[in-house]
Amino acid sequence: MLKTVLPPINRAGWPFIGLFAVVSVVAAYIWEPLGWAGGVLTLWCAYFFRDPDRVTPTRGGLVISPADGVVQSVGRAEAPVELKMEGLALNRISIFMNVFDVHVNRMPAAGRIEEVQYRPGKFFNASLDKASQHNERQSIRLLTEAGEAIGVVQIAGLIARRIKCDVRTGQDLRAGERFGLIRFGSRVDVYLPESVPALVVPGQRAIAGETVIADFRAQEEPRAGEVR
Picture 1 (tube, rainbow, N blue to C red):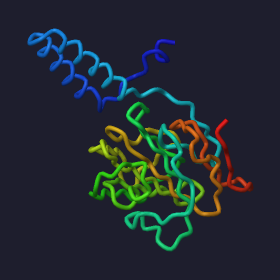
Picture 2 (cartoon, helix red, strand yellow; picture 1 turned 60 degrees about the vertical axis):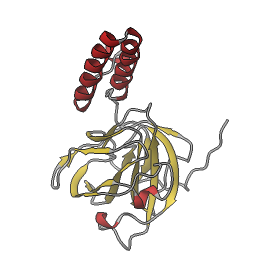
Picture 3 (spheres, rainbow, N blue to C red; picture 1 turned 135 degrees about the horizontal axis):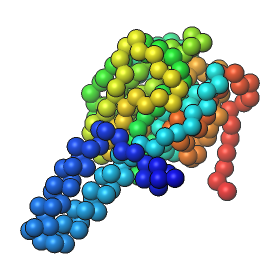
């Protein structure tokens, strides 16, 4: 119950929380209202770096959301060149994280990391389609246990200026396992074979490590949805 009310804090956040707290104490000595404002910002910083546990579906073939946020778009797209997936017909599922979402990213499927590449770039609003090609990003190619390639791309946004990725080439990971985060507001793209239908629709909210966004075994048509 306590972990539900007060979720764990990701270790990458503690230096920032500590900095905010120290500045708040100093500000309080200068002028008390500044200290209260700093305290609110310190609490927000702790909230931003929260890292709750998730219950991940483990059946083979499932693709799990790598990020909390809103599904921005679903459709055919070319993967970044550093993923080395040129010439493949791919579907892209883009998930946009605002500053209030959990920003810890999780593996969409179990498998081995084949490629990890960082690419500097611009800082357009991550909700824009051009962010996939022009923004700073960290690209990961994952080979699933069934031999299927999946691309996962962390994209920096207008406010986000730091991508943290903790995986290396050759590493084996489980679905739902934490692999990094992005500060502060950003986007994650998942690239799948075109034959794999998306099980989410634009506007739908996804939960990292829990929401099934696609299924290699599914035979259905791509889903549609509407606001109700």
